[in-house]
Every structure is written in structure tokens, then in C-alpha cells.
Length: 437
Ligand code: UGA
Image (cartoon, rainbow, N blue to C red; front, side, top):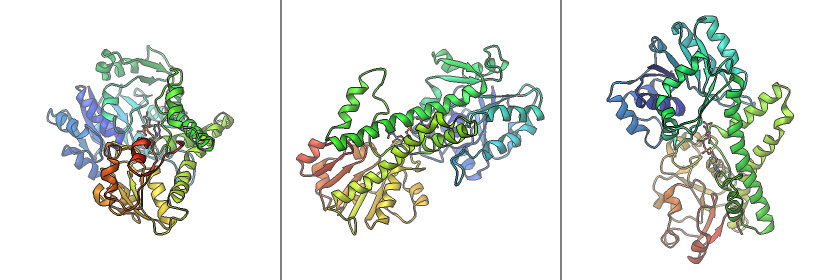
């Protein structure tokens, strides 16, 4: 099939490459000329494992191209809308200007029978409004919603082998024409057994925000338990292992630590609360305010704990922060708890050095006032205390004896509870985890 993908960020670039991998002819469109020239040269404009190899593989088949000109969408039968929906400045609601302008720019190029497929995370009700807009310009085109559940760091495999496909269509019916078209787009994952659900438009939009809210709630739940464990002298990691063995609960997303960040969970729960308010259902989601508050408290907690570990004052303490990305296998620093903690420590008088295997460029653009060091060895040198804040493999694998020889003070705060406290203590370190005795 001929497919266009509008918006070539984390979601769109991966989606375009994966659609070409599935055998379709794909054109990716973005207003950012730099991004387009990188992608056209087979380079990923951000760090995502496997993406660059995939771009090069599919580009050599001639099935994938990237352009800035929207007119290139003409002739595609399916148009995926993959632009961002960030948080509005100064408000909780989602900023829909990129979605709106993508649809407005696309409609002149739609032909009868074309299908516009929204993938961006949007407030419930958006799809119905946009469907009207599409119909007003091209009465025999249609708009459906097909939310995306990919995780950064696993984006390629999540797109090629999704755990489910959700098609939101106007009447919620399996017989809707769009279902057949999307089944053809996703023929390979469907043949491999991926379950697919057909819903109406608002349900499809809500599936996405509900899923992210549930994940955020799970993380904040275990972080609330970590607060309690700290108060009671219990161990939240063992608690999570034990409750996670109940398969109604499950162990995944129960890792206590410095909390969630990134370009999705924080802004999605806020936009969800804002939308519920508009719909007069705000009470249903007031618990998300608590989820957000627990999450933000983690950052303050780590600053306080660092002060404690440093003997009561941060002034002049040389602190090395291991990890800047919001999670490992990503160079994304949007709302990164690690960077937010690093900045707080510096504001309170510590001398902070931040290191990360992939995210330093993005980190320096966001927090230019922090000091960055690309080499882990250099970053460790003469540190009074270490903070492990993003659990990259190389930090999890640090050897406590070898590390001890490089630093000034044997103090480590494990913000992700990934190190073995016994091993580190045996090597002479003062080890502190979060919610661990
Ligand atoms: C999230 C969802 O997991 C995806 O399903 C969704 O498609 C995506 O948002 C989106 O809306 O586009 P992502 O933002 O890539 O994916 O990151 P997650 O893997 O969900 O991690 C989010 C944050 O939670 C990270 O900061 C991570 O360190 C933290 N986390 C995760 C914990 O603190 N504890 C855990 O147990 C798990």
C-alpha cells in the first residue's frame, strides 16, 4: 500500500520505517528540514536501538522516503498522523496545535476513499472533531483513531510486534470500511497473532490515556510504598517481588525509585485530568493528582537524602549523577527526573557533574548550566558522592571495588534500586536505596 506518515519524531520516524519494513511504500513528512535530511541519509535523529539499521535496510529497497513538502502525501491511500501533543505552557491540557495544523495541511491532498489515521495521544473527543474537519474538505475520505503503545527504547519491536491493535472507527463496527484497510496495513502482525479490537472513536482515544494513567499509577503506588518502607524500615524491592508474584498484580512497572518522567506519562495524566474537568467528570480522576504528587515528591526526597548522605550540607560537595535520560536506552531528557534532581542539587550549592552514554547533547540543551562529562571514568574522578539516576547497563555493572579507587568519597545513592546493597557495603561504601533499609 502507499502510505504517508505525517510527523517524523519518536513516533512517526519509527512508524514510517516499520511500515516500509512491512512491505508498504512510505513517505514521511515533517516540517523540520534537519530531521528530514538526517532521515533521508538513513540516520536516526535521536537514539533508538535498531532504528538506524532499519532505516538503512528499508531505504535500500526504495520503499521509504522523507520530505518536507506535504503535497507528497497525494496518492497515498492511508495517512498516519504522528505529530506531538505536548503539555500546553502554563496549563495541564494538551496542546493540539500540531495535530490541527497537520490535518489542515493534509486535507487539500486527500483523494476520495483516503483514510486518515490518527496515532498521536489526544484528549477524548478530538478524533470526532477532526473527522468532521476531514469530511468538510473531502466528503468521501474518513478519519479513524489507532493509538500507539510503543515504548522508547523498544520502539521498533513494539511497532513490528505490538501486543494489541486498537482501531477506533466512527460507528465502532467491524464492518466499517476502514477496518479492512487497516487490516491490510497490519497484515503481518495480524497473521502473527496480534489481537485487534475495533471500538468507537472515544473509546480508542481513552484506551491510550487510560493505559498510560494505569502505568503511572502503578509506579506511584510502589513509590508510595517506598515512602512507607522508609518510615517502617522495610524493603520495597522485596515487597514488589512478593506482591508481583500474584499475577493479578504482576511485577512489571513496580520498580520504586525516582519516579516516572519522559514525554508521555507526566503530560498524559495531566491532560487527562484537564479533559475530565471539561467533561464534568473531574472527580473520576482526582486520584491522578495524587499520582502526580507522589511522583514529584520522589525528586525532592532524593535531594534530601543526598544532603543526608553528604553529612547535612550540599555546599561544595562534588556530586556525580550517573544518567541524564528519563530512562535507559533513550536519549530523551523530556521531564527527566535525573536531570531535574541534578539541577536542584546544583541550585542548593553542590558541584554537580552529569554523565550519560547517549543523552548529554539533549541534556546540555535543556540545562546548559549543568556540567557534563562524557567519560564515566572522568565523571567518577574525585566525586564525594555518586547518584545512580538512570539505570543504564554500564552503571548497573559498575564494580564497587574498581569504582572506589576512582572517587573521593565512598557514598552512593541508588535512585533506581538496581545495585546489590550487600556487595557495595562489603566494599566499604555507604549505600542508600529508596525504600530500602
Ligand atoms: C510510555 C508507555 O509505557 C508506552 O506504552 C506509551 O506508548 C508511551 O508512554 C507513549 O505514550 O508514547 P515511555 O514514555 O517510552 O512509554 O516510557 P516507560 O517505559 O513507560 O517509562 C516511563 C517512566 O517510568 C520512565 O521514567 C521510567 O524510568 C519510569 N519507570 C518505569 C519507573 O520509575 N518504574 C517502573 O517500574 C517502570
